[in-house]
Amino acid sequence: MKIYFVIFVLSFLFICSITAQETDTIDALSRMESAINSSNKDFTPQEEYYIGRAVAANILTIYKPYTQNTALTRYLNNICQVLVINSSMPAIYNGYYVMILDSQEFNAFATPGGHIFVTKGFVEAVPSEEALAAIIAHELAHIMLRHGMKIIDEMKFYNEMDAMAQQAAEIAGRRNEENQRLIAFRNRISEFFNIMVKSGYSQPQEFEADNTAIELLSAAGYDPNGLLEALEVLQKAQRGQQGGIFSTHPAAFERITKVRQQTAGMVSPNTQAARKERFSRNMGRR
Image (cartoon, rainbow, N blue to C red; front, side, top):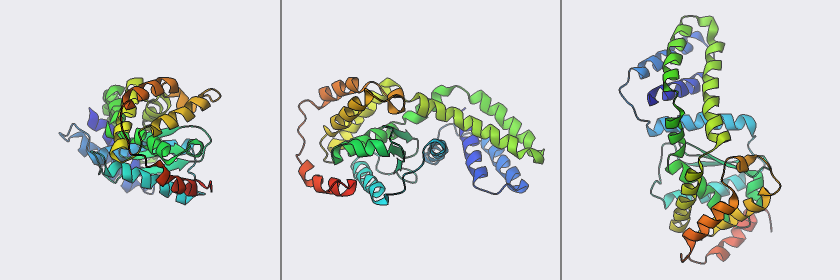
């Protein structure tokens, strides 16, 4: 059942945010038991947010946030807001946020609930604001199309969640075993992380996200060919880089071919020149 997965994620996040006091532990587990008895079978926007936040926490155990240029992070978030304001899903629980990861890899991630991560290497490699917007639009598309939640649907371990709930209830009666319970929660989060981030979205989902990104770019007044610019950067890097985005995405040339087919005949306003100075300033290229 979907609710079991939500239960253990919310419990994990709640427990990690408080001190390791026995009363708090029992209270968290009691909340989990109450949720098990709930008749709700669908994820709420709030639940999706907390699931995504749990996966985001795992991403940040591998990558460090890039904190040396807060203006650049603000710039990417401003682009993100322009895209979502002009989309069919402008508001979600707790909003959309972009974080730059301090890595020279070429990679980008999206987790449920509005969390977007782009590596510093990828940000620095693109030639224009249109290309930056395209990267963000592609990740927004994964969120709006609920690709992460569809992965959860396919994980097929809801029966394991039931067994885990029973085990956690037993642990609540053995107050000296809190560490074992926390390890169990972390292991389950890691399973989801490995499937969604390391294995990646399916190729059909990646192509679908590209199609939706083109729509998002066009609606916000960006030239959809910015996606081609971003993909061409990936294609060049793909020749010499292993892992990262190349282990989870279709080959760049396949995506370029499909994007060219979709954008053929599209007429977009030529506004790139107006953004050139802003892009150069924020990227430190003046």
